[in-house]
Image 1: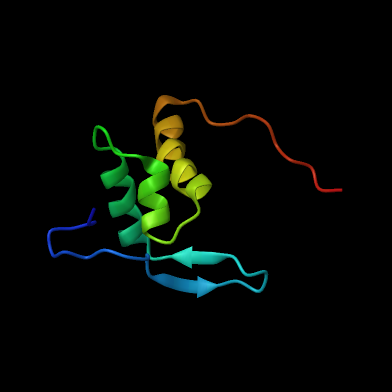
Image 2: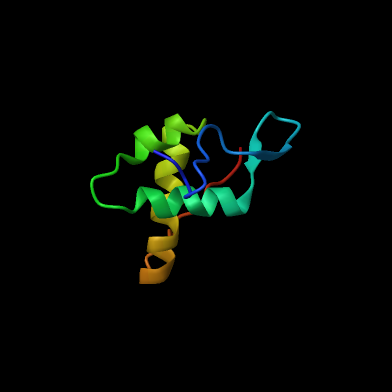
Amino acid sequence: MTLDGAGRSGPLRVVRVLGNGKRRFDPVEKERLVDAALEPGVSIAGLALAHGVNASYGRKWVTRPIRRRDGQGSSFRRHRR
């Protein structure tokens, strides 16, 4: 599966790597991945893995905007120890 009509496929472009190793992805490509994941019959985990993203991030990216839109944002906060 490709993210756009130009045949672009493969890992998402990383725009920054934090000191702890976490990657920040190009927001435009990330949005395209989310749009592609919302298509009927698409496996979010499979799509994320095909584009070099952990499957759990793919799921989080897709469900977070839906929760915000529906007013169901998480009310619980983590406390650091």
